[in-house]
Image (cartoon, rainbow, N blue to C red; front, side, top):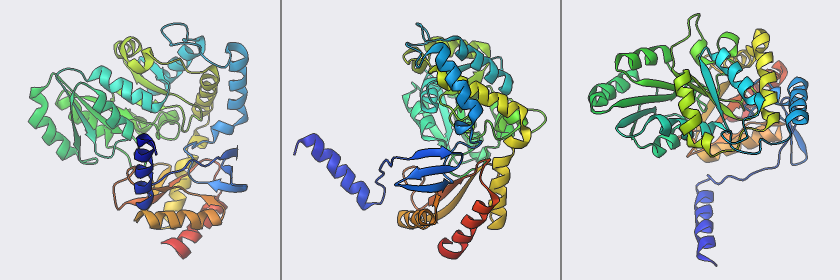
Length: 383
């Protein structure tokens, strides 16, 4: 065996022995919450398409119109010829929704965070991240020419300790957190974080991938839950969750956005977003801004679920059922799959060791009947 193949095989054997091996499974999305996998139709509680807009006739029609006008691809980097007119329209719409001066779109959420953080945190800088922040935040911090440290999850006292201890040694400090944490569904205490960052002259950045479209005023996200939005100077998020398309954004001041468009490597050296993705995203924003009752449904569905199981009231569309070991989570996933429901077992390294779980993601089109059926299975066979 070639040494490269031997290396890969040994890694796979080790992962399999620890029940952490993952395999891609062909999955066709039929409509809304219905998937087809292995010849069976399943109700999915694992999609982040919280408003089911990826299969909505209005967003699909907008994507088709965009292709007919602009073609299937952008053709080049945005700084060359790939900045088709719809991209700037999308940026204007995102900035308006988030209440910022401007916005910059990226190819994906991962590309956004590994582009934004190194652009801002260079030289004599410090990056402080929540210990449960998404992997791409940590990847961006690792790529930055900056020192990095993690603070305990949502622990304001620990963050302030780090700021008091280290702030004077650095020219700039960037504090980065999820707005809605993707594996636990809880929220960052943004108002208190914002005040702490102002106090210590630190820059606050939130990844609101799981907040935009389902939380706050007009679906503007986790920084907009109250009448007066929290002052978050760097509001990042994705277009691939509630917005139902693909790509990501940073909403910020015009100088910051201008800097991204000329220096962020994942903008400068990446092809622009395809027109279909942009057209669908704009149509999704139209729906989100005009249908507040629809926007509220995913969280309401999650709260029905938590009430039925006597769990803490859901704060977002995400609810974890923590089971502990990998084998127990995989067994629970199979029980639900056999009953016609897809609920992914989440295992290390995505979550800390000993916290393998079922991660439920609730959407606007989940029926009360399906939620009640899953609750019954959990009570009788899993919990």
